[in-house]
Length: 163
Image (cartoon, rainbow, N blue to C red; front, side, top):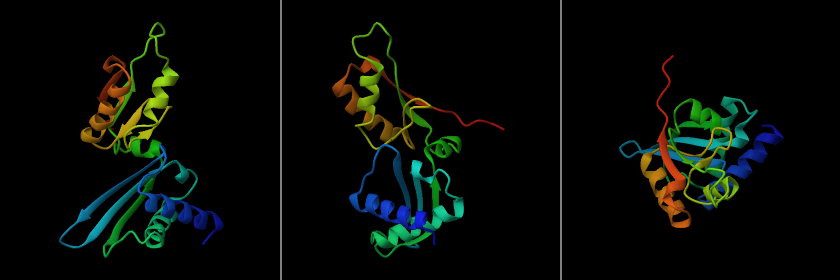
C-alpha cells in the first residue's frame, strides 16, 4: 500500500468519524437490510489521480479504521470525483444562483452562502451546489432562502444525456 493511499485512508476515516465533510465531499450509503450489506459511494475531490481499484480499497479500509460498519459488510465501494459523479448522473439536482450585476448582492456572496448550507457538493465550474435527490436539494434551498431573497435561487434537474 502506498503512502498516498495510507494518507487518504486516514483522511477519509476522519471524515467518516465526524459525520460530515467539506463542500467537496459526499457520502451515499445504500443499506440492504435483509443481507446486512452496504453499497457505498464516496464523492470526493481527493480521488483525482487515484485509480478506481485503489479508491475501493481506500473506502473499505477507512470504514474499518473509523469503525463505521456496525456489523454490516460493504459489497460495493465506489469513489468518484464530483465531476465524475455529475458525468454519471449521480448528482442530477443542483441549486443555482440567479444574480444580475444590478442586484444588491454579489455572486461571490451567494456562492459563499452555498458553501455553508446543506450536504451537497459545491462545484463552481459546473455551477451550483449538487445533490443526489430533490429532497436534499430542497432542504438546502430552504436554508438559502432564510439568508437571501428566494428570487436568487433555483433548483434544476439535469436530464440524463443519451449517447
